[in-house]
Amino acid sequence: MIVKYFATLRKITGVQEENINAKTVGELLEIIEGKYGKEFHDSIFSGENFKKGVIILKNGKNVIYLDNLNTKLEDNDIVSIFPPVAGG
Amino acid sequence: MEKYSRQILLDKFGNEGQKKLMEKKALVIGVGGTGGLVSQLLVRGGIGELFISDFDSVSLSNIHRQLLFSEKDIGREKIEAAYEYLKNLNSDVKIIPINERIDNKNIEDYVKKVDIVMDGTDNFLTRYIINDACVKHGKPWVYSGVLATYGMVMPIIPGKTACLRCLMKNPPKNEFSTSVLGIMNSIPSAIASIAVSLAYKILLGYEVESSIYYFDGWNINLEKLKIEKQNDCPACSLKKFEFLEK
Image (cartoon, rainbow over all chains, first blue to last red; front, side, top):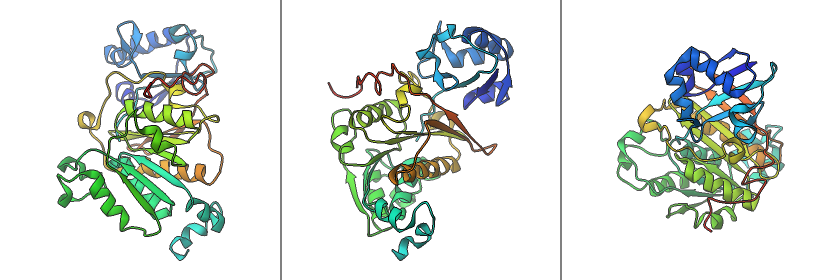
């Protein structure tokens, strides 16, 4: 599936998007953390939970409204990950 | 109408569109980097009435990107300096400065008076208050956020598109701000321009998609992400307006 990174996450990953296959959102994030390390983890998680305001979309739906880390993924899904952008 | 002749030439506007725009009222909350240019474009474009609000004062670090202010305004109330600047741009437009902070107690009074709300704020709590008030009263609003070399814009039309809480259920705990990560001065202008284009589409009755627009101002890239309306969104589906005064 295509994973897209936005805002500050692009500084960590160095790429705007890449192809990674995983069965769930949790597994996908584990793979991404394995590639980019603690800095990526700390941008997404606060302890065991997502940081408030972090947006992970599966085909335009925030996974908070689906099954969070257990949200199932298919190879043709698009996952977009971004922190909130607050400035004005 | 000579003032708007170049806009009227556009088939998307025409005489009818321009007349329609001149009957519309907008509220811009925050007249800094993004909101300042949003206000300026709406006034130059010939919106009927523009309500502006801000409670901050002009500081030296604002000048590089906040186009309504100059060095002589440092220390002045932004609302006063913004009003003075905007009222000289276009005498057709009635500009109404709001000399109080927009919060969960007073926002509904203002939202009810306008056709659209434009986000020029720098914090998410105010955006959740705007979202609740606009969804409750069926008024469109446009979320705009900027940071470093990028920005985001999302048009929200209650009953049609996803709302802010569909995108992000709860406000972030810690927010990255421009005072920490900085801001390239071309970004608020780019984001304000996209936001105003969306505002024109909404005000003139054109369709807008349920999407968020992400602009990377360094690599010069605009991406559109489709956002789905959530059937269990607390605001637009369940009508629980937790950020408004009980």
